[in-house]
Image (tube, rainbow, N blue to C red; front, side):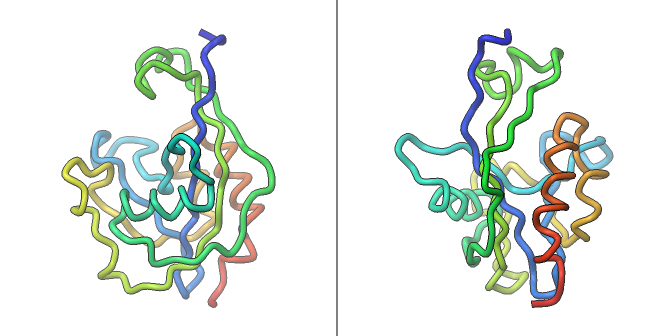
Length: 160
């Protein structure tokens, strides 16, 4: 299915005042599943600008958009789904995703993060993690992107 398109997507590396990044556990994978922890991300709506989309996605996925954009990866990064997920993941319509990644500084309090705001939450738990942990938390096909994010966003992984 290499003729399938990539889904356009935005991703958020949300840093707190201590320089740690928010990771959330996918509700559909279960507590012990490898690659269950990830950064918030989601698709762009038709005509939507990536900077607006990343704040919308934060509000939808973690219940708050109390953040300011402080950086971004200049180019779009992409990944391909592994063969066993083609035709199943991403509603079977895409070969993977092309993503615009942003670094954001969280301006709220931990109590503002509410995974229960969506009737069908994507995540069932969250925590603050060290940026360097990201590649080890990621599912295999996302590791190269998370490794790149560690390099790109290392300047934000310090106290504000």
